[in-house]
Image 1: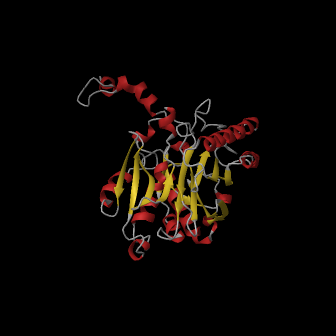
Image 2: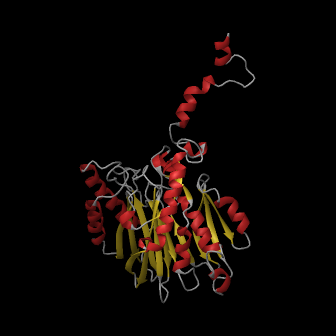
Image 3: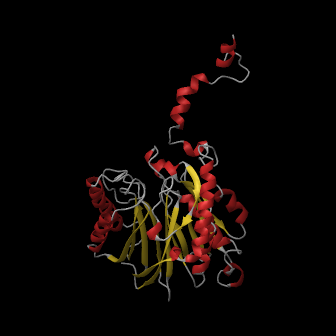
Length: 374
């Protein structure tokens, strides 16, 4: 067994109350009960954001460990049974397989894991979002680890001045590429500025030390049909040669637009909220993000501190609501509704197929309007 600690965050939507809004307390209780029986866990914390159940676990078994993933899968199944009895909406919708196959990656749940040696002080922040997709982390991770206007440590901290490595995943082609910053900053932005396809998976120090990691599973690519947005999670280590807690939180003070919201087909502001206020309602939104801070001590999770409960984010929420008002006014028009590439798993292909024989060349005079004039 490794002396290193592994922090695993695994999430799934296993039934919403009411609609896609929240998680019933009974499901949280069942999840706590399931995890408490696992002797191989060092510690755990169960939380939710919107209708997503989030399992935060520490252990010494390494990343992608079968025991840990089996535990998460069994926990989601147990909670799904309760959700079905309550007739909660979308019960078990993120569980895309009939049986566990050794790892929950590719089976529906979102996963973010990192293994590391505990430092003298080990502060981490676990972010979890609802009604959006993995690329939602691109903007804040860029701000945190690459933008000196956000993170002054990039300029004045000798331990950060050399920059970071960004591992970016192409979610369509299932490929990855690593960019070294700041020297490849402009190349990085070409890709992560398209968050529907490219997502920042992990960030490392130049010596290979893990700094941040996120879930990059896209449910529609896994299922071959629309099954909801992916509601991603992200882990960021802080301080001592890494961005300070305040630098990590700062990007969320200015809500950025993300894909998701109603039926996973709209753009809207990512609103930073406390766990208590993480239940999206308006047009099933706006998209929400929570930030829970922990001190890890000998594998134990000391916390959490609910960072976005702070009144300092009141203006961010006010701004997010103003943006939401504007975006909603556009209704089914882009850029509120996603572009056609992102509508691939909705009714759009069916409508196009139904009308394919009615499309004619622009110069063809035998169209319906011309025929009517005759």
